[in-house]
Length: 110
Length: 115
Image (cartoon, rainbow over all chains, first blue to last red; front, side, top):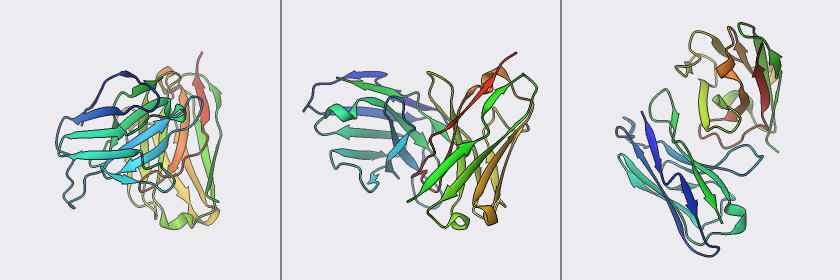
């Protein structure tokens, strides 16, 4: 499954919203009824961190300014008000079907 | 506190082998599936391999299938990745991550394949 993210780079203004899109080459709806689409953040020099799993579920400790939505083949990560600590790379990833695959990444920069 | 610590990285020649280890602590290792991911310097993320909690199910990315072997020792709370026939394109940071939603990652270990 090919994952395509847009934009590749997203200049943002502090306090303003940001949005990243992710499209899969086929539906990510699993036979078990779940859609295994996650969003990961990678700050400079750090390992990745999962923000969102199964489209819209935030992990404990993830600020509520991050939200995920979508279904089927089209998904979106939104940051309601960008903060300085949100700078980094963002990846969508599908784990519905092996091999698991990532989008190419979106760089969020101030 | 959940901790994952990778080790075993280093420099190896093309065609060589390495074995990575991931020491887990702070959680009940034997009930979690585990994964290996990698990231070439300056590049994006790539999923490498998955293993179920009991080791009976294993999956691999296309680029490593037939060359890499994932395994685990639940008695030692450890995950492994045996990497054979290494290629220059295997150069990357390798991360272990806890499943099912890779909520915890190690800091990574660097593999450099070069002649």
